[in-house]
Image (tube, rainbow, N blue to C red; front, top):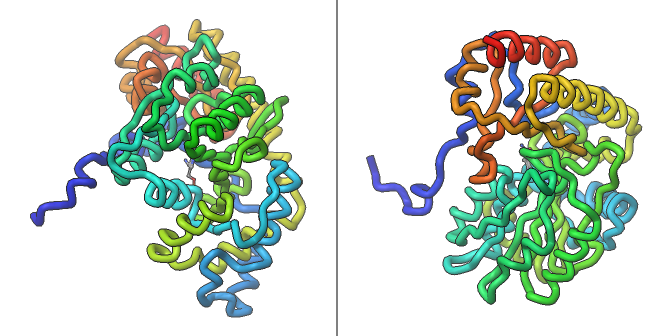
Length: 372
Ligand code: PMP
């Protein structure tokens, strides 16, 4: 084999994906990170039309202008962020936005604050860019919410960026407004970047989402269509930042992927401009499932924070063999340790599966794993 670049040696293939490969195909999958709903019909129709109308050429590198204009309106309406189409980039999922953020701003020696636990991709993009990870604890005592005072403690002159992800994968935690605002203030006072991954923004229950970009100029706000509109395989997301930051991000975007998929961009336009009732239905159903899974886990004696967003719960389960035993009994889950040290003794369970399957899965766990 040809010697790979040293940067790839720091990266591991996803533990979660590996888990799906080894377990039985009939198992109920609570490991999954994507909605079990399908793309709404109006979005499918818009994409079909785009092909028939030959909207299949390269678009403008940042994304076609009408879509970026809609994204600007969305940022204003939902997030209180004032931006303009020149400072929006349509990306290949939120994943690309995370990757180019790291490539454009991180280099060896930079300290990058990373909530622990957090989504696996953050660690990978930091490692690929050569940044040094500085974990910031998110503990069950704080319902896994990142606290501004814990961030402050980790700031040094080398601090270059922090990742925020509210609502959070893997915990479902939604940060408090005062912490978001305080961290935004810190980013201005200490001159570091906030990379705010807001992909679960709409999947939130009885709580309001706040974007740090309302309070700070040093923010890259990342969002996408994978979760809100169940468009995971269409690979479409977007970001906004101030003019200078966007220019650097754009250099990496243009020189790596040119532009995102034109057809998916048309679907995204329809998603933003069309009816939103499918989204509301989906969120209502997620809430029903969240209530079910939390009460069933608590009933089994597992302490569980009542996650306020995303579609994950993160119960405390100290049995080291739980994931294996559950998989053998027919329920796939993910060990919390995959997401950081504070994930030890926790299990991530996704409720992006039908209500009936979640009931069945909880019955299996109760009968064959807990009491088995
Ligand atoms: N951020 C978080 C927190 C996620 O959970 C995911 C998907 N699992 C992504 C980003 C990636 O989203 P996309 O499909 O838009 O690349």
